[in-house]
Image 1 (cartoon, helix red, strand yellow):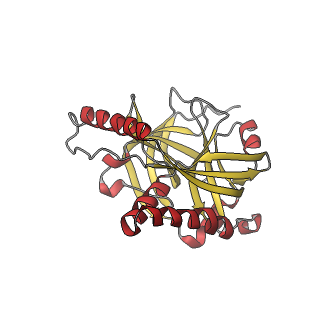
Image 2: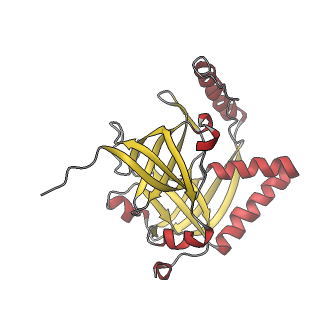
Length: 257
């Protein structure tokens, strides 16, 4: 007898993905997040208006969170959950010594196989061949800033804690990489990548910050070991996006034992 799929409930997960804020007409400024639950299943958590969360609810990668969810009506991807962000509770953090073992069973080397199996989130081990950055055009930046500002002006009418409009990153950071499927490339959407650039720019200036980004993310991470947290586009299910860049020593199946 087949069990009826659960349509809502409460779950606990380790946060793996926290992408940079995006602006949409339906939900305003939101952040696409994803985690792996205690049974080892991927969960896509959306929408999260991260910057409006109470300070005690703001989470980062490796945090263990508990939350209420329901299945969405407009997103058929099997991992997707509509999250009640008011229910979010931080209940711990995955220790550095536990991370390799926790992720080992989820690491893949082919996105085509994941797509064929009906999955839309993946933790990819790939061979990085290039890391690069490109400055956005003034027109692109102006359009991004205008979209965030306009939406914030509208939201501030109903928000008791008005936010400073999000400042889009002036650069795109890209990886070229090889998998079992062949060569691929993609733009990093990891919020930590943007935050790192801003932090280094404030400390050492823009040129030095970019050089350090190239050294760390283009040389040190690939040399020491890294994973790409991937997710498919909601409208284009065959398009995989780089939603997270994770520095982690090479993961082997031996870590399971």
